[in-house]
Amino acid sequence: MALQPVDATLIAASVGAAAATASVLLTHLLARGRDRRHKVWDRRMDTYAEVIRSRRAMSRTRRDVLREKTFPEGPLDPDHEGKAFGLTEAQLEMFGSPEVIKLGGESFDALKGWMVALLEWRDLKMLSPLDDDLRLKAEAKWAEFEKRAEIATAADEKLNEAIKREAKFRKPKREGWARLAFWRD
Image (tube, rainbow, N blue to C red):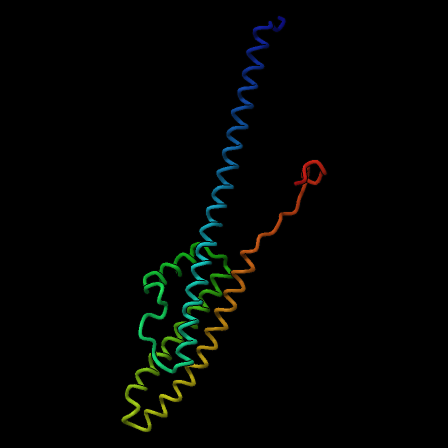
């Protein structure tokens, strides 16, 4: 039994429709994956920008305290409250790369050590005019504070450098058919 023209037309149309549906589905899946990667990248870069901004604000406060030898009157990060700092740290854990998360933790630990030394120095300084022994303890605590400030600054710099390295865009290596001259940008 020979294939009739009507049957051949229906078969060709069915194969064409199946191929078109498959290509639309494949295109959709690939685009969705690309969009998801772009959204994660955008959130990562927004988080990194906020981490750098926050660390710089803390660094300015650290420099001011070291220069003036006075306890800061307002918040340590004048642009944000404490809740925003915690949110930034949570976002860093969600969207950061493993290296940046590790360095962010080290920076946060150094920041906590710096803040504890600052608070202990402030408490001793408030009591030191009454007692020479307390004044000497306050001076020793100030030296510890200076050392912790250097550690925190170094940790922040390492974190900033890691973020900058990761944020650089690189042109991907061309493979396969893209190597041909007529496919180049």
